[in-house]
Image 1 (cartoon, rainbow, N blue to C red):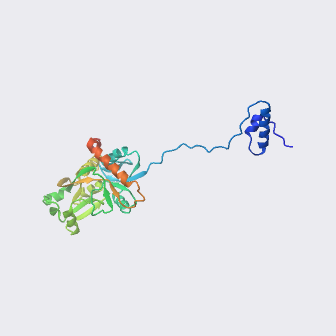
Image 2 (cartoon, rainbow, N blue to C red):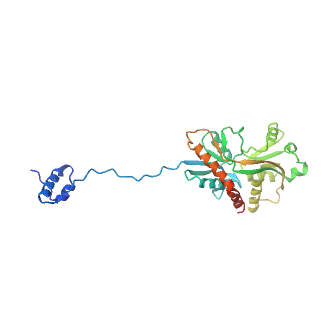
Image 3 (cartoon, rainbow, N blue to C red):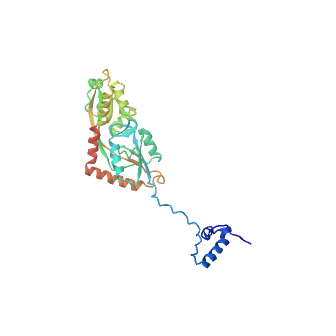
Length: 299
């Protein structure tokens, strides 16, 4: 004969599955005879409700030149510079993306884009013939390219016409930079002018002041900024050769360059670039880019 555990009829009903199922039915009969409410057997456990969470934001990695002050460089372990401030202002207007800014040596960044291993890099100039793998955003900022030479070269020759008067000279340039114009490039190809590339403005300026190169070709503000930093740091040895600007060349626009390769890796590309460009136009209209430049240079 079946027996039920010494439990109340209500607790019996609560333990209805399996071996107490029969006892539960007995408890129901007894409850009905006594005029008590019949406890309902528990229904099978319902699956837990998990609160819906928003989908993870798309991650967009943008590489930046790590040694192009004051535009894009690393200082005290942090990426900074005028272009970096501009891009950060754009990011604030794109909350639907999680954007990461990563410093990289310039040539390394170009190679990553060329291989389709990186999405974007700033701040290249527009060079579609030389870099067919790269497309460009809305221009962010204009830069004035200039030539600076040391006192020895200035003393011994007239430097009025670029690049004809610079034949036979050693011109310093930043590694991976394409500046100077077609006539300059032709003179280099023909061997009339030699190029000595180094990583960043400081390395080039030190070579120029020590007489290892004759002139240096780069953005004017970048040269002046780096000379100012070196002066503050006590790096301008009194024995170094003095420098002077000898030629003003073209105004170049800086862009966010992005790859057209590997569409499967960057499905967000079209939407992101459209919104990036719209944000740049808004920043120009509002005057925020000019404010960013003034704030940075006024530090």
